[in-house]
Image (tube, rainbow, N blue to C red; front, side):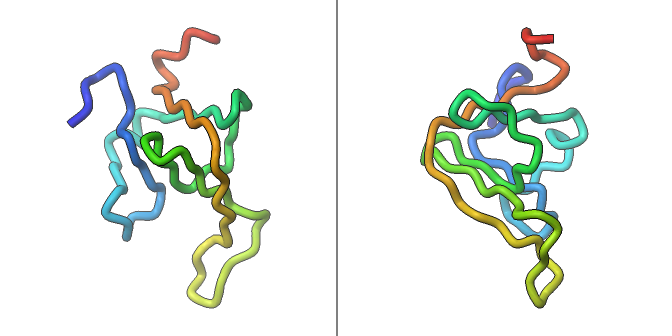
Length: 85
């Protein structure tokens, strides 16, 4: 379990995923990937160092967004606690 200051180690926006956390998503989670703010993150994992980014508006035959998995430094944060604001 994570405390109130840090987002979960792994989080997904897909409700069918076991890593979906509606409470954290409702609060607002931002992600910096390799130091750059990303707004198209579908899933991330801090401990493994990867993010899944949606690719445009394309979808697969099941209606899920097409994604690409990238490796690198992942820094999630709650948007209401962001010191950059």
